[in-house]
Length: 382
Image 1 (spheres, one colour):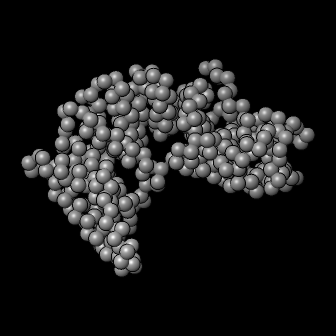
Image 2 (tube, one colour):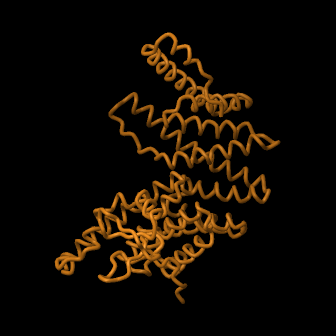
Image 3 (cartoon, rainbow, N blue to C red):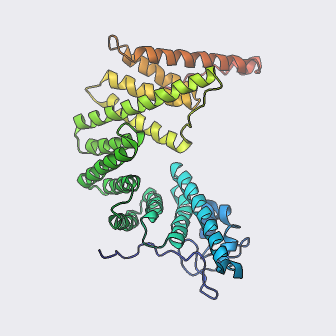
């Protein structure tokens, strides 16, 4: 199998002594130097500022021992220590890039993603499947910036590494197919997108289970493509699968949360970070809008999705949003005789109302009479 051309000619982690100084971000000729580590260079002040905000402020001092080799670092023990330092840098950059991407700060994510890939190549070599997650991070950042041709090149490199390693894990293949599906959706190649999202679902179900939220995300992406093709019945069916998966997950988290309040000895399961919470909120809102905009409105599906949103926002501590979506869910469920969710929705609405009343009561004791008049504000209307 012939290797494709390298698409990401990144600056080496440590330049040979006397080598031309190149910009950390674009690898152009550098004219500026970081005045803290004095080992990182830039072509202009804009790139220096972008790198500082993106990652350099986190790793500036960590680069000094890596970019200034000593006699010890050339010895076996020193080389092992250097590899550990580089592994630490990779993890720092990976987490920083993921956080920026979850916040949709794609420009700020670029420096961390670039350095993560560069350092990974330095540690692991240029042709290992272990580089795929780093390529996908960089591709996602460029996807957010609309640089689709560069994304295609990065994913081509990642795909080649996977094809060269057929025994690589399901999780890596799932991530690759999801990224390829996003690219093909963006370029309008919807049939290819569906194929990759179907592979995404297959590999995620093998790795995490058919009922996992990771697999559910793949179904949601497939539904979006079918919606673009005007295939409404398939879209609705897939959205229903996604909604039921998230309803089970959020109900479980809600029950654990309530138990922990009633019994402090109960261990709380880890919740989602802000980026993931925003993704789930957007996904559920889009499904809700789909049902509300459709002439064949399904009250049961509206109740299900709105209840998911109510639980999500309650777990995030936003009582007004939880109450707004809970009221919507209750209204929809009451249109269906003996609907199996009505009791659970009523319980959540009552719980939120009780907590909000306690909170308002506690706040009012600390407010002047004039300030209390301004507390009578309408609740959030989803």
